[in-house]
Length: 398
Image 1: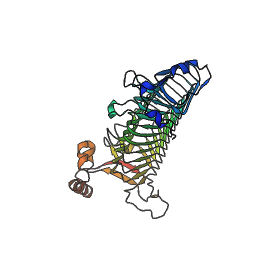
Image 2: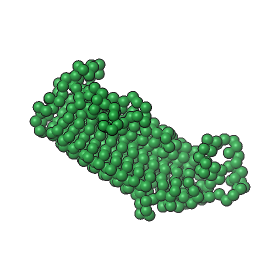
Image 3: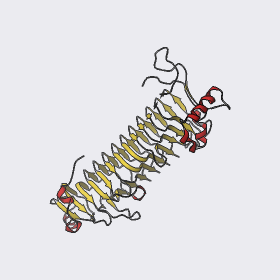
């Protein structure tokens, strides 16, 4: 990631800024504006196609009021600017950059001390790439979103860095791609609502309350992401609520409260395919609730999770298809050396039924008393245990 402003401009007060709007107004449609290096005053608005290139030496400061830069045209390129000092209103969605047009390119900019970062409102086919967004120093619930897309489709959000923001939100926005971004210190990494066919690929997400949350959004692709340290506010790295037909593959989920959480399939044709992921050192690897089953869970690695899989009621997890997964707590053998366990991997509800039915009891997990109770339950069950899952082809080799 490049540094796009001179340190001298950071020290200048907003009242010393030069006016930028007259330069924008004087640039003809299709023209290119390269302002001289310096600090300029915002808010500013672009209403015709043009290129504005700051060369990494131009800062625009809105003086803590409104949106720093608003694009109300299509075919605009914003490159090499530092946008800073937006207002702080939620209802006005004060942002570093607001886009209300189509086919715009936002490339290599720095947005800092902004309430919302980038807001795309009704815009399609915009490309947001290689930008750095840092929110205002506010408590988590009072921050604005690092990225918000409302009613926009076919936008490409790639190679950006988001820090100290609330969420990345896609609402009523199908067919967008969010790839190869980095996000840290946020509430929801991505909040995908009524946004089918979203592609979330190759992102690095760390130190968030919750990871990727999909609600009422079908046919998502969640591939090749790394999610770590999602431990607050529910803490699921991947959550699917009334969102069927997702492909979840090649992700790494480490040290989260829950690796993946899913409810009932929307219908029998819209079950999730969860394959070749790694769930490691989480409190719970996967959790299923209120579901009829049918999801296909194939060739994943479950490594040293405190609870590999939890369910909300007997029969929930068993109804899914489990095959070819690697389980760190598998206790069988591979006598023929084919890399597949000789006996199925089975997970039963014993003493852990306590914290699945009474979550507060989870605090006492691994305590000597519950370890003894669990041992006695397995040795001579007081009641018939319930089967959580059976993997008929457990993989021994990674």
